[in-house]
Length: 230
Image (cartoon, rainbow, N blue to C red):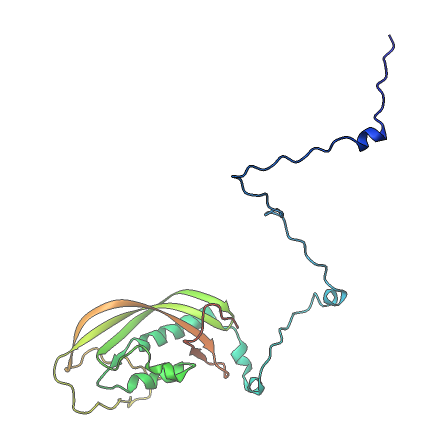
């Protein structure tokens, strides 16, 4: 039995065939994304000059004044976590300590530790007595190699006046014996003083922003923000 052949589709039939229209999306659904979220975005091809230098370390050039040439190379060295934690604990202990009977002591101690010496009077009204100890460094946030934010918890003991204050401020004392490994003075007042009575102790938290000065020494810069980098 012969099979009747079907006529082949002509070119004109394909040309005039109606194109199927896309189904409209429901109004309550979001439009389909134009780029797949799990696909890599297209990248521009590097120039031949950039390809030749792909194996070298990139150097970022920034505008700087003549004072940049006087900076120490140490000021560009990364700050380690242990170095930052130790310095932050030292600063937090002195920042939370003061004594109105020796009002100049606190500013003298804090001034060398700060990038801005004017901040040495921050955090104290000039009245009262307080002693901080037992610093406990915690979380560390690092936006750059030479900018580190350290969260520190210190124990703070407040005092109440037990007898009338002296007529004149007491001068800051100095150690008669030179201590081995001495780094610098502290403004934490003595635990016991006949003119003061300890009231209560509390744990206080603060975040210390640390960087390096032009000489490479660690300093606290209160003007730094978490978005700053080296």
